[in-house]
Image (cartoon, rainbow, N blue to C red):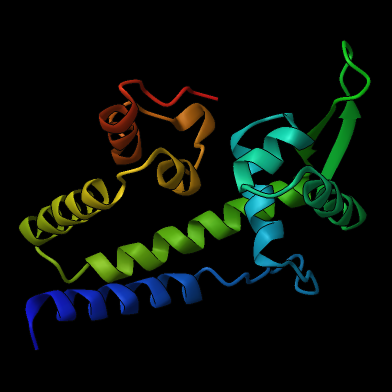
Length: 181
């Protein structure tokens, strides 16, 4: 097997493992909670961007405004978010997590971190460093258009750093950094 075909195969397998591992599992206190992947992504986005507008969530998840409205309505019914009117512009609503929504986000992030830690535990520090370097180089080489960069950006909110590989790709393509939101 040639090396590019093998890299394609293991990249595809890696992507499938990551996607499958991101399936929602509810914390013990909410075992009956049924969330879609997009609902979970909206909760994570709202947690990273306190008091986000519905429009911000739509842009952050790369969905239409009407789809974001429906998504937020479902989360409201599940009592995972609250929605409040902007004091300066009544057309704008701000979405914040409830305590239950915050627990789900924390549970999901803890679970993801544990999965990554399990995967890394048998690697030496040098192997871990090589993996990070290799993944960053792969991302940098493939993030070659502004549209692609925007579609994969996690919109990290307060935790956004200029050292982010996606931000560095944005600088290389556009000449400017991604704005912190």
